[in-house]
Image (cartoon, rainbow, N blue to C red; front, side):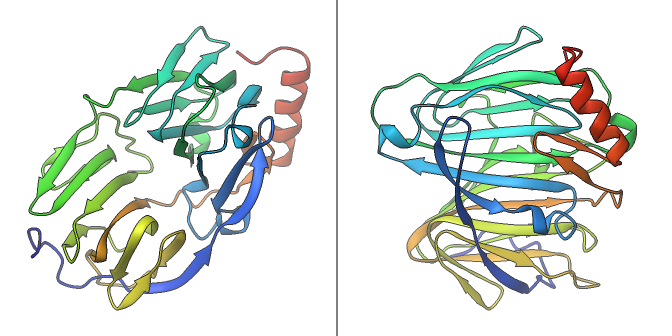
Amino acid sequence: MTATVVVQSPRPVERLVRGQATSDGAGVRLTRVLTQDLQRRLDPFLMLDAFGTDQPGDYIGGFPDHPHRGFETITYMIAGRMRHRDSVGNVGLLVPGSVQWMTAGRGVIHSEMPEQQEGRMEGFQLWLNLPAAEKMQPPWYRDIGPQELPQWQGEGAVVRVIAGLCRDVPALVQRPATAPLYLDIELQPGVEFEQALPSTHHAFVYVYRGDVTVADTHVPAQRMALLAQVEGSDGVRLRAGAEGARALLLAGRPLKEPIAQYGPFVMNTQAEIVQAVQDFQAGRLA
């Protein structure tokens, strides 16, 4: 059983990566899938956090007010409810199947707090870098509800399109500079899915349910498969294991610009980082 074939020369897996258990915000437990040491290798992606627990103590503290500058955050909820508020006046509620896309730009202060006292909280937050020319743009924000999120469906496959293009289904948000692709791929047992990718884009697969085979490499749950850069490759091929699978596929055009990061600020030089900290301390962020 297979979806429409579009790939002739699929990328192999360069290596498998195990995420790092950590906490952020007010003690929210999570797994840092894409860590800082992979930022150059996976440019333009800066970070991917996965959170998922049935224990309220692991998430109830949420993420109180904190600043950002110089990049974008894309939050994708699988289960649970989380309220967003920011210093520009945006308010939104993340529910299962929804996406929140926030461009921090020159600066924003926001919070993300649970709106539940029990039950499962699960989702992902991705940090996407901005090119130098766009880092100081005004902040921007969009909520995408579960009924709005575009989907592509094939035999035994459902793909939720968060960024980029899957077959003829475009995402609601596009970014020309980095051309990000962000897909949530749900496959029934044994089903194969292929996605075209430019050979120059950095790409990875993160499996969060079941297991998949990428090219000839088995990828179990809670592993990132970093896809090799192979000249002449035209995409990626996934096949679900015996229990089916859900996996994120991300790819993007590298910016090839310097990365200077200090916590929630990501710029191109240390001088810009110093300025970001001073602006925050002086109340000059949006």
